[in-house]
Length: 374
Image (tube, rainbow, N blue to C red; front, side):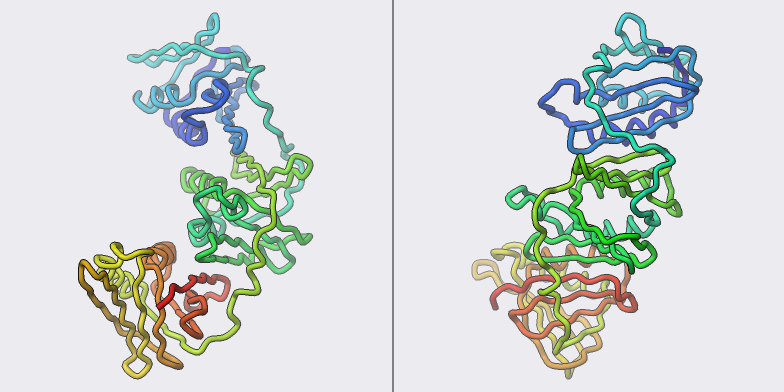
């Protein structure tokens, strides 16, 4: 193997690949990145057996070949050198890499030991295509609501529901639920599957890195292997799907309300910061939300017996009845930090029913937060 490539491109794609390489894999080969040269391009692969990335960049190839070597160390070396031509030659199982003033040699492992990653031909029709900007928006508004532990594996994923009138992305950890519908993406057939939230976070990172805001993301289902693949330009992100039944969430989404408030996200966040000084010391970060329909305001308060209490309020437009309800300040802060609009709507019927957040003028997003005991 012998090739040369530009440092900036090589570095950029190495960084994407090395993000999914496990720091403590069960198999030593999983520490490595797979490299292959053929017909004027450098093919690169990385996997942790749950998530895989395959991509390629243009390269000046003198000798074709394939090899694997430590991903993290190679990435660090290429990141640390100036933006110039990088020359690579493999001799006697040593990966020799150099520029005008820097060089390194890495030990390698045979490419035959690297796990096989399924490949989708470029001519194969995707199951569905989604605008990259829409997908990044959906991931940002939904992924944070998924569970972060593996007690219930189905809650660590995002449910993708493909229907004729759009695609829904749904996540819940049992205390909250987020759903975003993308109407611009429509499926030829109805289908639903559970994608690990980590896969969507990596996909969002890749889209942001390559700057493909107007690209179409092609989605392929490999049902015999229980996998899904997302194609972003020349990058393929492959992920295992999660087995299991996602909760029947539609029945818990309220269809009406007794109290509706139009609120400023910034005002709400500022009040939460004040109240959280006390609330973060309370079990469950409990705080009280009190809606005053006559005064057109919302008051937030928190009390901790050994510490004290505090309160903050802000104006809003209220429709309906007064309401007092308790929430975790952490959960409210999370949702407000993941909404990219300042005009919000909060709806609720009673203190034991979920609070509902919506974006004013956007009927395709909804977020539910379960209340705490008053």
